[in-house]
Length: 362
Image (cartoon, rainbow, N blue to C red; front, side, top):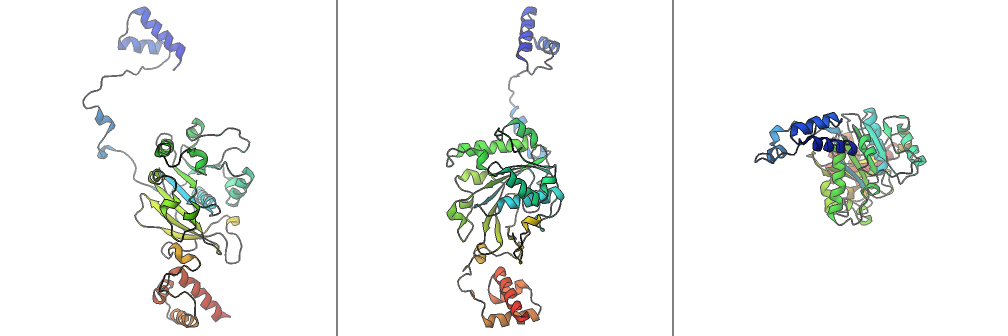
């Protein structure tokens, strides 16, 4: 509203000695200020306009963008130590959502959306190189901040508020935008998530994905502890809707992924991804980050780590076990059945089956 025009309205009302609602309305219209908004006295039932019965809510049901991974209107976190391929999975996710193909060649995509991907702590040339692996450099619906910018765009900046409408926003990493001075205090986290929720509820952002880091000790543990992966403040973990923990499996091409928070999802989820194939060639440089162990077949993290077999389970592939495996295979037993018969995890069983059958072939 123009201050000069408002002064003209007040002078007009003063000169005419008329301060009725009708006079205000006529003066606002005369000087091009539209309809005035009057403050009325609060009535005894006005609270019902703010706090309504759920049956009156005309809102859509919870909608998955990518099965088991991403929900519309949600705040998500990909948490993992550096070099745990979080950003590469985010690129895989973007590529799948832009094209409609399954994420990791497994998780169906139910709706396609444009993406704003902000990654200020990576050189623009390297960011474009990784995006190019997935064909995102040629996609006008995948956008980042221009490489020669000298302005930091905060999450409450009007430019970003306009940009996120009908788009997914990815912040890589979260702390570049959260600007938390004291991570152990809740008020700063509350303010940060209020701004994220405003992007979704007020400005039409489809969903938000935050790339973040756990404690070093937590990321090297043999179990995935949500309090270690969603560190600093319980408020941070509590405000998220969905969070995936990433752990690179040493001496393999696998990345273990576990959903450690899943509002809207009823079943637990864990799986592994493969960044290289069995010949040592990169999947990622070919624009894919495929699933390795399916959710229904994936053991806990400990089973994937060296020396991770549980107490009481066979720990080595002996000649006796090789003979048992080949006997089970002749009986057309499945991987799951063989794992149960041997008393080991499904991942261990698969590795032993491969080793046993390789020896038979050679």
